[in-house]
Image (cartoon, rainbow, N blue to C red; front, side, top):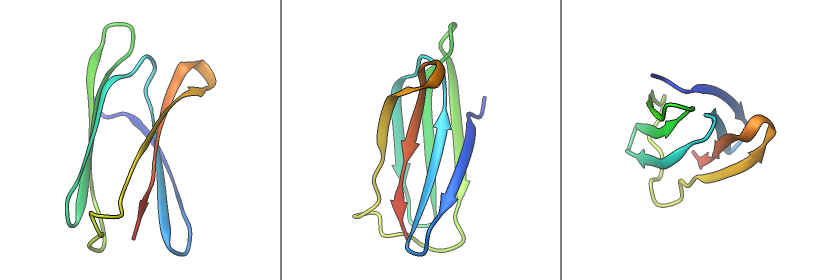
Length: 83
């Protein structure tokens, strides 16, 4: 199942939030022109996965993510990567 996602762009960065309740085993894999987000989540720990193709190549060495569990309804947010 894909996770619900919201994105925000700035002049030099893109921020993407994936919100999954009770998320565990969060993984993100940055590739040259795409990234893959995955985790287990929800009350029945269903696997969520999003594969996002990007318009341009990214620098995989500066791309990063942050997992937060403090947003409303115990959802998890993932951010960000620089382009």
